[in-house]
Amino acid sequence: MEKARRVEIPVERKNGEVWAFMSIKFHDGDEDKPKVEAITNALAMAGITNVVMARDVEKWGNAEIPEGKQLMPDYAFPAMKECDMLICEFSEKGVGLGIGAAYAYAKNRPVYIIAKRGSDISTTIGNIAKNVIFYDEPQDLIEPFKKIVKNFPRVILASQSFARKQMMMTADIPFEVIVSNADETVNSSKSFRAQLAEIAMRKANIVFNQTSHRAKRLIVAADANVFFDGKLYGKPKNIDEARKLIKSMQGRDDIYVYTGNAVLLADGNEILESANVTDIARMSIDRISDEALERHLINNQPLIYCGGFHMTNSPFAHLKEGRYSTACGMTIEIAQEMYKGLQF
Image (cartoon, rainbow, N blue to C red; front, side, top):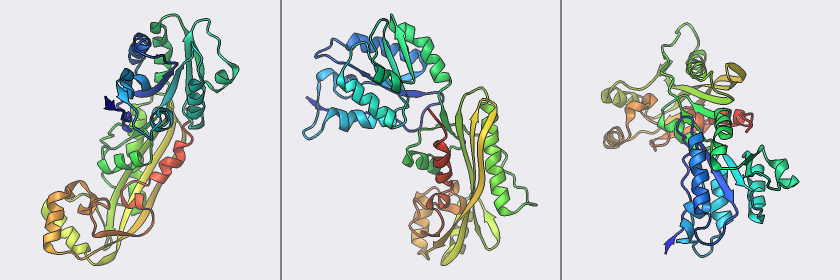
């Protein structure tokens, strides 16, 4: 018998994708399989990918929970936390259903109760539910959940940067990517701080306008440059330029990363709240051998990073002052704070 494994739920969602943990009172054997499959198909037609412990972890009784592990705390709770919502099939009551619903509610995940028409829904479970949806057949769930998916709050990262995606993942913020393709031409009449903030807001505004048909959402954008010797440096155009840049910074502790951030909390075509600030981090760059520099240039894709290096893959770069996230090219703390306003 195979060992049970946790469900892998991507933090980076496809555009319009919603993940739901579905709980249901289970019985031994395959009795529940047709019901789960029918509800799964209906939810998929509404735009929801669901997670079901009996199917996805226990494999309908063919996977064994490893010794020392328990289904609810070790498999179900982590999946609930990573999903966007909890859907609780409450036609038949069960203690586990109430425990799961309470956990999801405590983790600020919306709880939706579905039940066969005529089912008795307790006051307790009804009070924590965002909505109670009665149905005769699973197909009856499609339209109600289409509306829920359409209006479900989202986080949109206006960047395809691998480093920025990683920061969102580390912060446990589910997100989807919409690349702005904004014009990044700087306005040289403005200060360096203003230039970076303006470009970040340009990116955010383009994605805001592209998604004005959508409901509540948080749009996160950033733009960063390396600053030293009175000049801003973006991504090197070629390996030779990257090599010269890094050599010129070696032995210095006055290397700065200017990171412009723009975060918009929006609903439809209305901006509810915004932040637009350039944060600065100071770094030092070690002196390294020519051989070490060449290894860096070969192995670490220097042309995709401002200055030809990045904190996450350049051991010769050290944060001396400021936020680590700013040095990495996006001040994630701003997005984390505004994420709290994205009520589910």
